[in-house]
Length: 530
Image (cartoon, rainbow, N blue to C red; front, side):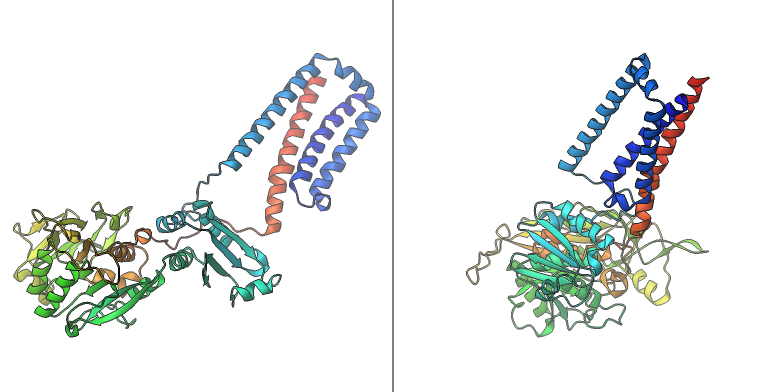
C-alpha cells in the first residue's frame, strides 16, 4: 500500500492544483461540480497518502530525484511568473488582432478616422435586455479601442435603471445614446454604420447644406422607385449630417444661395442656359464647391466650355470595356468596372471595384493654367475603348458599334477633381458675414450620373457610395468623412450560451489537462516501479 500511496499522493497534488486554479478562475467555484470534484479527489488522495505512506514521504525528501523535482518546480514557478509578467504588460499595452475571415471585429477606415478625431469624451450608453449583448459589446469595444482616451461605453439594463432610460429618451430596446459634450443622439438600430453616422452628426457642428440642381432633366432626389433617381444619395448624405435641398437652376436670379456648401448637378439631359453657366462660374469664383455628373450624348457646349476653363476636358465619346457574362464568355459592354484610382484624398485607401454605367471620358486639362491643380480620380482598365463621333449614337440606337484601331485605348480617365487657388487666378472674392474670404474653389466631375443613382447606391458590394460621399466630403472640407464606410459582413464565429462557455472552459482548461498530467504521472510511476 505504501508504494500505491505514493502514486495517490502525486495524483492528489495534481487534482488539488487544478482545483485551486478553478477556484481562482470560476465566479462561484463551490457550486461548480468540476471544481468540487477536483478538490475532493485531490484532498482524498493526499490524505490517503499521508495516512499510508508518510514514511515514504520522509525518505523521499532525501532522495536525489526529489532535489531534481524541486529544481523542476522552481523552473515551473519562474515560467508562471514570466507568463504573469507578459500578461501584465499586455494589459498595460493592449493590442488586438482580428483573425476572423470577414474582419468582424475591425472597424471600417471611416469609423476609425471619426473615432480618432474626437477632441472630447464620447460616452456611449447601450440599453439592451438584461444589460448583456455580446455583439454590441464587441462593437462598442472596437470604438473604445480606436480612441481609448475619449471613448467610454457601458451596457445598461433599462429595467434596473428606468430613470436613466427616460432621461436619455430611450423608447425601444437595443438603443445606444451617444453623448458628446452638450450634444446627444440616440441610435435605435445600432450597427457600425448607424453609430458612426450618429457620431458624425453630434461632432460635426453646424449642418452643411448640399443643393441638387433641377430643371434641366437632372435626376430626381425624391422618387425612391426610380432606378435612375438620387433619393438613396440624398438619404446617405442626410445620415452623415448634411442638409439636402433642391435648386431649380434655370430660375436662379443672379447667384447660388449663400447657404450652399456644395452644389450637385446630377446628369442634366438638356443644355444649360448661358445664364446658368455664368451663375456656376461666378459660384466657383466665389469659392464654391461643385460636383458635376454628365454622361455621353448629354451634349452641352456651354457646360463643357465652363469645365474646360476650370481644368476639366469632357470627351465626346462613350467608354466600353470587357464584361464577363454567364455562359457567354467575355464581350464588350457599356458598364466599365475598375479599381484603378488616382492619388487623392477622395480615393485614398480604395482597393475595391467601382462601376460606371454609360460613362464618357473626363480628363484633367490644367497644364499651364496657373492656380489650377487637377487630378484624374478614376481610370478604366487597359482593355477599355473610347468610341467617339457617330459611334456613340449608333451604340445607343442600334445596340452595337464597330471597334477599330482608331478608337482610344485604355486606361481612360473618367473622373477628375480640381483645386483652384483663387488668388493665383486673379480672383478676389469678397468676405461675407464677418467671415474670411475663401481662398480656393473645388470641383469634381464624373462622366456619368448613373454611378451614384438608386440602383448603384443600394448595392453595397462596391465602393460607389463611398466614392460619391467622399467627393462631397472633400468638396466641403470634411476630411473626417472622406474614407471607406462599413460593409455588411458575415460573422465567421459560433455563438455559445453562457452555460456552454463555462462547459468549454471547464473541459479545455481544468479537466482535459488534469487527466493528461495524471496519465503521465501514472505511466512514469509504473515504469520506475518495475
